[in-house]
Image (cartoon, rainbow, N blue to C red):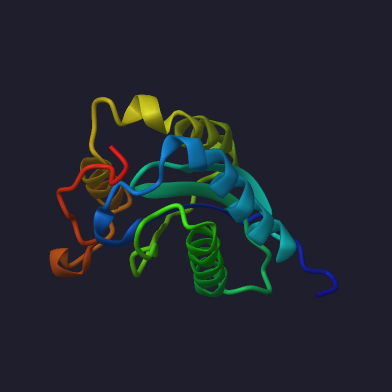
Length: 159
């Protein structure tokens, strides 16, 4: 698109199906790299990614010619297929339906990158659920609790 100039940085958060802790620490880096490849292959910019055992955070620079929901569909479908092809689990892996996406000012990007990369430290004091609900409140997102992520109380399947 000629004469189109944008700066669209979007932090994303998405959860493992039923919020199960299925992403093992030894697999995390490989999954991070795979999702990075998905984003870059679609010519978007990935600024940060961090897959936790039960959810993932990513900060992307979104191209204006792509719907965010299309990118998320591809990220989740392709990375689920990748995990299943690797046979990292005894069963089938998939991401939960839906995602969170919130916009920040350019001046906040460095802080958001640090936040994403320091998820392990952050979750020592706050659960993903607490974190997600705080973000929804911070951005004044009106939501129906029936349609938030499914919250299964489970432990990492490999533990």
